[in-house]
Figure 1 (cartoon, chains in turn red, green):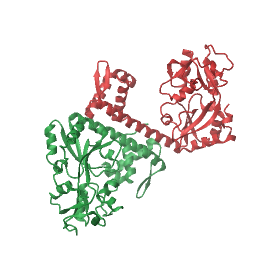
Figure 2 (cartoon, one colour):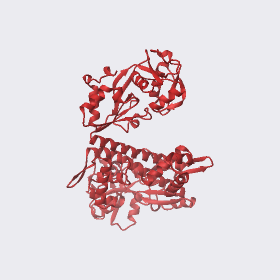
Figure 3 (cartoon, one colour):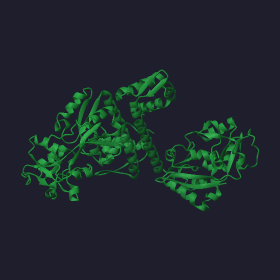
Length: 305
Length: 309
C-alpha cells in the first residue's frame, strides 16, 4: 500500500468507528501510531479532519467533505483492480464462479461437471459469497459469474434460471416443528425467523423469511446473518428457522447434523440462477451460460434435483 | 491487488498520448523509466495493455477496458487531492481566483481593491486559465471561483452573471479590415479566424468565431490556440481575426501588440460571469458572491456599453 492510500484507509476506518481506540484495534495498530498517522495526514493536507472529544472523535465539516472524495477514490481504485483481475482471468483461461450456500458442484452437479469435462484445461475456481448486499454489481465484482437464489435485477447484469424448485424451511432439531414430514406455509408463518443483516438486499432477505407468503415481516432473531454459516449459527442458538430452496436446505441438513429441512408444500418456488455481467469478455462465462441453456446438456431447469 | 504509486496515471497518459516518448515528456520522466513502469504494471496485473509498434503504442482490447477504470480512478484521486487543497485554502482565508483573458483587477480596476478593503482577512490569489474544455467541472477543479465568458453548462457548476458587454474584433494592423470604424457580423462571416485547439469546448470556440451567426464553422487557421495568449500570438503572425469581449480588447490595446481592435455591431454580447464548482463554494466564496451580488464587483464595465443588436 502506498503511504497516501494507507493514510486514507486509516481515516475511513477512524470515521466509521468514531474512536481512535477501536479503529486501531480493527487496523491491528497501536493507538498512538494511528493517532500520529492521522495527525500527519492532517498536516500534509493542511486541514483539520477530526475533532477530538473525551469520548471519541467526530469529523470536522472539512473532514466530512474530504472523506466523501477519499472514499470515492479508494473505491474507484478497487474497481480498477477488480477489472484488471477479471481481464487477467480471461486472458489465462480461468473463471471465478461465486455461490451462496452449497457449492455448485454439489447443488447443481450436472451442469458443473459437464462444464468441467468440456474444459479440462480451464482453471475453474469457486468462491463462497456473502448474501447479496448493496448493488448486485458490486456484490458480484470479485467473480465472473455466480449461482444463487436470484438477487436484485440491475441494468447491465444478466441472469438465467438453472433450477426452479420448491422451498423448504430448515429448523434446528430442538424446534417444535422438527420431525415433521412436510409443512404448509401457514403453519410456519408465525414462527421466529433468522434475521438477515440490514445490508442484505431486502427482497432477497424477505424471500428467505417468507414475507411473500405472509404479506409482511415475521418475528426476527436479534442476531443478524450475513453468510450461510452465520445463518446456521443463529438458527441453532436462537431456535429460529429460515426458508431456502429445497435442495440447498437438504444439503445444509446433511452437513449440519443439528438442523433439518422440511419441504414446504404450498409456498411459491425458489429460482436459483446464474448471474453475470453483460459486458463480460471471459469466453468461459459465455460457454457456461450456453451449456446451462442447452436442454440436453443435462442442466436445464427440469433437471435441478 | 494494489497499484504502485503513479502507475495508473502513467498508463492513462501513455494511452492518451499514443506514444511512450510523448507521454514521458508530459510526465517529466525518462522514456526508459516509463517503459519499465508500464511493463511492471502489465506484469503485476497479468494482462497485456499495450501493443508496441514502430511508431507508437496501441491499446489491446483488455487495455481499452482497463483504461476506462484507470481513468476513473485517476480522476477520483486528483479530485480528492484538489478538494483537500481547496479546504486548506479556505482554512487559510485564501480564494483562488481564476480568469480567462484580461486579469480581473486590470479589466475593472477598483472593484477588487474595494473587496480587499472590505475583507482584509481574505487573500485573493489569481490563476490564469486556458479556454474551457467541455467538462467545466474539471476545468474549475483547481480554483474556487473564475471570472470568464459563460462557460459550458455542467453538473455541479454554478454561475452568477456580472455583466454583459459587447465584442470587438481583433486583427493584425496589416489586415484589410483594420482601418474600419466598426464592423457588422455579416461582413465577417467569410473571414478567416484563428483556429482553436480541439480540446476547447466546441460551443465556446464557436461563440468567438461567430459560428451561430454563420450557421456553420468558420474558416480557420491551422492554429490550435488553447488560451488567450495563444490567440494573440497567432493573430500577430496571421492574416486572421477573432472576436473578444470589449474589456479584453481594452487591455490588449494598452500593450504594444501590433493588433487593432474594431467594435463589432450586431453580434450576441458576451456574458461575463463568476463561475465555480458547488463543492468549492465555501464561506469565503460566498462572501465574494455577496459582494458581487451587491453590484460592487465588476458589474460596471469602464467603457461604454455596446449592445446594438
